[in-house]
Length: 320
Image (cartoon, rainbow, N blue to C red; front, top):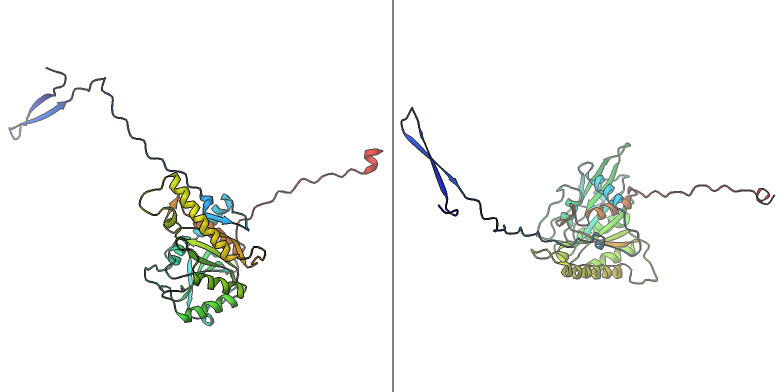
């Protein structure tokens, strides 16, 4: 019998109760020839390591350290956010002493999705239809302090532009110019489309009313990872350069005159995504969280090591 044939061994077992024979076939395969090598396992495709530092452009600030980013992430995950109030008008807002930050931008810029990612909970309703957010909504983050105050209050503002309403703009302007608890306004700009005319109008209002503000580029994944395939090294490098050019245009919009700094503008732009994950973190989300804490004075501050005191020896002891 040749080695390539299969052997069948039949075992006949008779059951005393039912009086029938049950045949079990056991197939024994002859091992393959030692000269035949198994096909090699294809190696997994390796993708370029994403440079997370390219998601921020600091022209007048210092980037946060990994420890500071980790602290910001833990702060927002410490306790679920708490809904505080909704107000259609500035005069109906609840007044408190906790520091506040607000998020605003054009309709469908991804503001609600970003807030859900930042606060680790679906607190804002998302919709493809412009003008979904119609009220000024406030949420507490980080849990209450010992004196009963909320550590940080985050406001979701109605969008402007398509789907927006004129009365919303009036109430938002009242809030921006009169709310003393406001520590920083975060203006969302679509990373795909850059700064639009309506965005420049908001920037002008910030400067006119001396509102502290910062630019956040939303939907950055649409620029870096558009399409279903992960880009190779050359494609990713090209898209990062494209994102950097958008950030430079943001800087020019924030600071058109390099000789005349806007003291109320925070000198950095952060690109982020509420959907794309990189190395276990949503893209740029922790950097935005750190900026929010920094605005409220709640960030983890780096410790500065002081030099050891130097003993001063009198002149007469040295020279006698």
